[in-house]
Length: 361
Image (tube, rainbow, N blue to C red; front, side, top):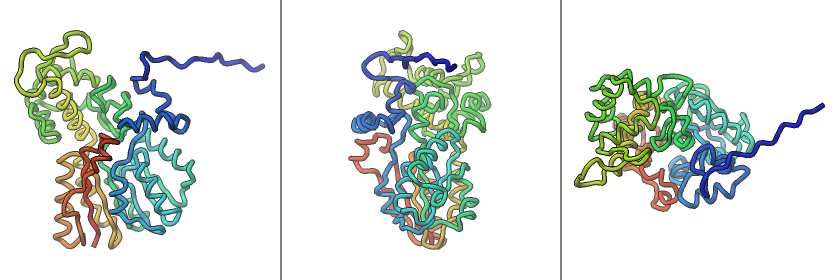
């Protein structure tokens, strides 16, 4: 005799619209509630659990993909760029996509496989894109390649991943949460001078010294930051704010210049960026990738790289310039290409993006 499972109503959220990530069940199921996703996007926001691909038109103009070619999307993410590349190949040729995120890459692969892109035209490799040489060896070299170096919106928006200072969650920040050391443990490993260097070098943080001192003081006092909110509160305090009531921060005293709360929020973005770069060894990975990149490309192969902060852009610019001077690249971008103002209105997360390109000799 079958037992009837009692129906459970979905937990209702307060207010007119859901605020918490896991309450946004309609945004998290765009295949079922497509009108909701379109509404959220039209307002200039990214639907929860998704990612809007950046500078698609400009990238396609640079890569000039033709059916029959082989290519690589070095950072699969939500699959927006990968899908456009697969459309351009039109089931002729082959695309390799890499990603180290064991959570989001599986979702993306399942979604795109359901659209008819099987292993005959598309291969997903769960590896760091610094291993471009290994993937290229299997592929026989690439005619085109994209590396989008930004974190995916799915990672940023999900509180359980610990990427955002705006929501409560574990202080983690790992692209691959199954390996490596999370941000909370990493902070405990670093001495004050090392923390200061991390914030200064990875994010140009003006109060790097004071922040490093405050973090080390909290750790010594048995109050090491374990959550995103813990670290945010330290940053707020260093920037002259005090918690008047739970969750309400106000200036501790009169100050000239920029509003302290605005300044503190900007500092949080920089501090979390600096930590994310360190935890995921992003500069080391990019160095290795750029070193191996030329040998992964076929003669005449086109490369596009999206960067999101000055440190990344400097590395890419320097590598492309050195490669051009050495005759490795036949052409490189004279200057960065930026997203249009219209795209930045539709997708504010595109604002800091820079696109550079190169063509293999």
